[in-house]
Length: 97
Image 1 (cartoon, rainbow, N blue to C red):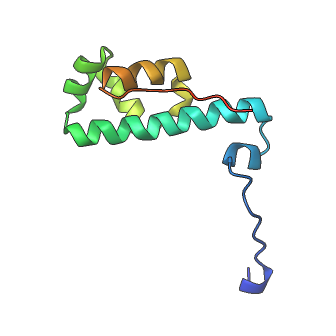
Image 2 (image 1 turned 180 degrees about the horizontal axis):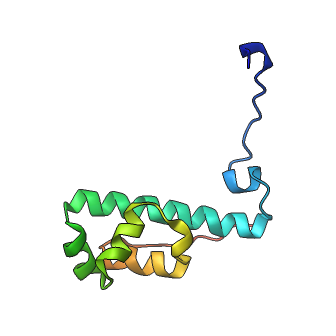
C-alpha cells in the first residue's frame, strides 16, 4: 500500500466503539482494559513475582500469569476491581451524563 493510499480515521475516544461494539458493551470493555493496565503497572512497581502476587491477591499463579499476558477476556470488571483493591489501589467509578 502506498503512503497516499492510507486512510486515517480519527478515533471517537473508545477503540471498542471504533471496532464496532455496541456502546454499552464498549464502555465496559474500556473500563476492563484500563483497570487491567493499571493493575499490571502496580504489580510491576511492587516487583512481586507471580507467586507472590498470587498470594497477595488471593488467586492462583496461573491466574496472575493470565493477567500479565493481558487476557482481559478472562476477567470480569468486578474481579479486576477486586484485584486492584487487593494490590493497594483505590478503584473509583465515576458516572457522567
